[in-house]
Amino acid sequence: MSSRARRVATPLAGLVAVTLATGLVSDVAASATAPPDVVSQPAATPAEQAVQFWTPERIRRATDHDDGIDMRSRGVRGGDSVPDGPAGAVPPSGEQRKTEKARKVDLPNTVGRVFFTLPRTDPRNPKNWRYCSATSVQGKYRNLVATSAHCVYDIGQNAFYTNWIFIPSYRDGDGRAPYGIYAARTFNAHDDFVVREDFDFDYAFVNVHNGIKVTRAKTYGQWRRQVANVGRLGDNVGGQGFTWNRDPKVKVFSFGYPAGEHPDGDRPFSGRTMKWCHGRTTPMPAAPKYDLQEHVGVRCAFTAGAGGGPFLYGYRSSTRTGYLIGVNSVAWDTDGNDRYDHISSPYFNTDTYKVYKAAANRWTGNMS
Image (cartoon, rainbow, N blue to C red; front, side, top):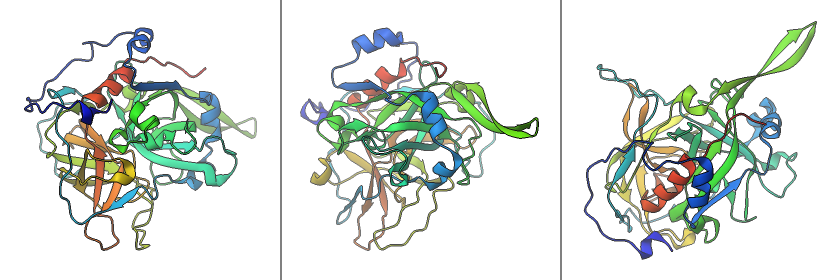
């Protein structure tokens, strides 16, 4: 049942910090006790195969995936985003407290690009090479990536994407992976997106294997591919916190890798480097096209490619950490000038926490 059908208007409580130890159990137990509306499915592509597939050339040629996931509206008139229970939060990992005040926005190491191929197609065809944005988020086993559900699941083919990998802190468009490459093991999404194509549930959490770094070294006069295990994602870049049932009007930073064009054809971004927006969220209008009633948006000119990137609440440049409170989902033109001016996310409520909690308990380990 959709959250909107069982919502209870509850006054927003203060930020409730909860430890990851509370309620987090083994991967096997979590699988057995996950709510029925949480869809968890192993990746179809073996991890080693997915990593080998994404050569630097293919990474450079991958195209932004969420082109066309957009809306037009006459202003921002508010939708139906309210808490359905008490607020809660999981603190970020890797935080180092500093006393000095940051003078600029330092980009988070946790944010990067995900690459994948369209399911039930020829993966050798470049038109099936796609990418989105995503972020590492805190989990019991430090192996969790948050992104949009449309960046893990093809609603046209009714299948999860193949050859799915995450590269945190991706930069310069040359395939560099400073913290390694992390292949998907388990996709976790809400049944209302997978079955009903409801963009109020356009979020997903992906458990990834321990990362690897691929280098080339010359031995005995020949260049050879060398692979090194770099360990867990969260140990290398940290993990953003997670929060739900917050006030729908809060200040956030949005991060991502936009590359697509505006409706008027202008293309201001390349997708080669991470970009950011900052502002106060507001409930967005309903959009029947996406069965969308519970989105919150922030003023931002992001285009396709930024989809899946995080909305971070309480972000601090000094530590590069905050709390995941949304993910880039739909681009909006609210003034009719054929330029995107808002980016929206599903409102993170108790349903979102259910999916997160199921994913946050799953162990992965090394690729096999």
